[in-house]
Length: 250
Image (cartoon, helix red, strand yellow):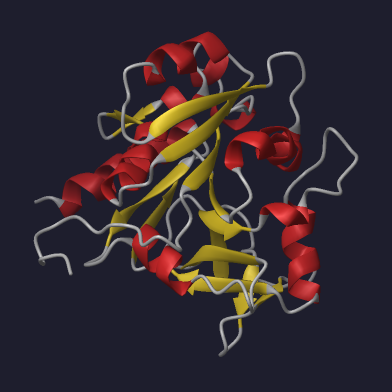
């Protein structure tokens, strides 16, 4: 057992890889993304992608697969010196595959075990325990096809939509109904089974329909984030996120 001062670590049955989505065009972050890919935009002195990769390093995740498309050479150069986690690049230079297609392309690198998924336009202020470690500990492949980290819509920052899910007492997630406000948002991190994508024949396809299909089968679950979620999707959201980070360390 780790001492209270030791960083949390993954058990042998926890996910050992992560799919990190860094291939998007960052259109909502323009003009900042005209010359810099969104994952490299700095918030609180650190590129967005490093906020999440440092979280994975802290729990001992061995490998992260990072897909690239927009300004790929900048992302590759930035990640070249990182040793924890070990970075593998999934090249989407010739065609942007969307998140679902990105996973399909990277399956040979991800392996046959469940893996983390991770967006690069958000991070969080951690609570007393690692949320990634909590997510890994909550994973139950017998009941779940997908497990998502979720955050309360009202207490998160940078949320300019109506939320994503309702949260059932047993942990299952239900899709937001049309014209309704949902109490929880997807916090950009989850765990998924690779077999969900193995029969897919399309090259380019989104990920969200897989969430909704799992929800319809009662196989989509959520874990509530302990801390404050910061969505940084626009230039205006950067200042708000930095102020929140600054307040947290006073």
